[in-house]
Length: 213
Image (cartoon, rainbow, N blue to C red; front, side):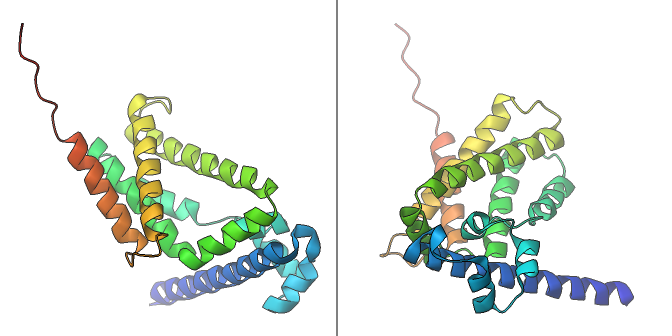
């Protein structure tokens, strides 16, 4: 009983932490879009969200990280545990599990079109944030590649590991393009699943054999 109660409390605490981080990021993105990073102070952000300056630094080391949504001690390790716990079941399963990892991240972060638009506006006002954002993507790819390497018992540079990362990137990019299309109402999870299915349909189609001369 105590274990169940503790788990529930931990879950609620994690949810509150995500909500506070989300509010901080939303405010920082709006203020950055309006006046740039130099146009506001951390104290102004804290006043609007209703937290102390000290609490801000429990979430983000700087305004830049707050704008990008890079939470200190984020939940990547939780997702990694889920991925590793599933165990090695073949390379097709690796791709499925990696996409599930992306879906878990999207669900936990509450990513949507509005939040993406806020980020784009902030980066347009502060272009130097783009390099950090792209670097963050490369860091995530490296983390996922290391997870795959550990679980499957192969070097990080193994071509199959790199192929999984390439598929993840292609599926994520394709899904994002669909979700951000103002003419569509599809959710990100469905878009990811559809994009992965489309890639598999193409790869599972064998090319026609050439006739022998």
